[in-house]
Amino acid sequence: MVLSLDRWVGKVAVVTGCASGIGAGIAEFLVDQGLIVVGLDRRCELVQELAKKLSGKKGQLHAVKADVSKEEEVVEAFKWVEDNLGPVHILINSAGVAKENFLYNGDAAQWRATLDVNVLGVCIATREAVKSMVGNNINGHVIHINSVAGHKVPNWLGINIYTASKYAVTALAETLRQELNHLGSKIKITSLSPGLVATEMTTLNTGVSEERQAMLKSMPILQPQDIAEAIGYVLSTPENVQIQELTIVPLGETF
Ligand code: NAD
Image (cartoon, rainbow, N blue to C red; front, side, top):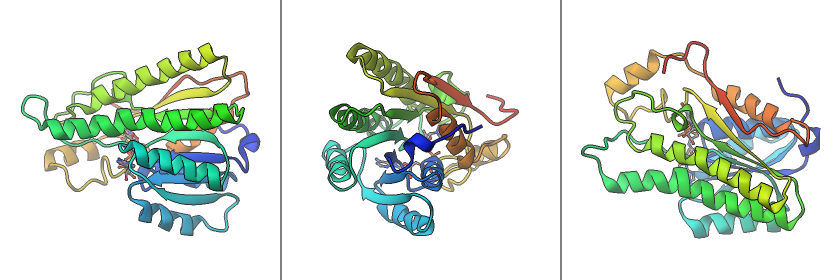
């Protein structure tokens, strides 16, 4: 499926939420392809372990500790990247949270925390990356890891504010596309919307109810490397082609 990632070899890609799951899978894939990847996560020690595992590959992985819901930490992280590795060419917003909760009786602090990471975190990291790209005349690429839940509401008990946060990501991708067009910029923006993927957010999460665990385990599921290869495809398109939205689901997905 991947065309060629040659033009990105040696370039800097920031991947948020890189400690596990989809973000870790994408980081591994991009390092294999020869990119300089910065894994930005609040669980920095896990990114460091991944970096050790990937040493000796064509590219490199650098771990940077930052909580995407804390503006000053994200600004500081991007400054570190520019000072130490150079301008940002690619941003992949993969950091995200989904807490089992309900709208009819849930906890507002938990809803706010979800919006802070899934919506504001995406906005802040994107602003910093686009600033770096525009300031250095780079025709970069921003990819939001959205979800099928950003386009339709799956009938899953406990999904609460997560779907609204992902609908927001759909809107953010299109709004940024229009802003970049208005600027006359050649920076690309893609919303990539996976169906169910085996990660700590889903089948590898032991902290959810048995009912939810059983439901997740009964469904067809993708692996993080499936998403990483789709990222490879999106990044490998010719300069005049933009994949605006890519939905990728396991064969047989039922919701
Ligand atoms: P995951 O829990 O394995 O990965 C999420 C990562 O984000 C973790 O490494 C976590 O440490 C990091 N993170 C969370 N809050 C953070 C914060 N405040 N600052 C920095 N890092 C933070 O789950 P995943 O499935 O790999 O999720 C990645 C993205 O994919 C999310 O945006 C999620 O909404 C989306 N997604 C997941 C699925 C799925 O089925 N797993 C489906 C569609 C979309």
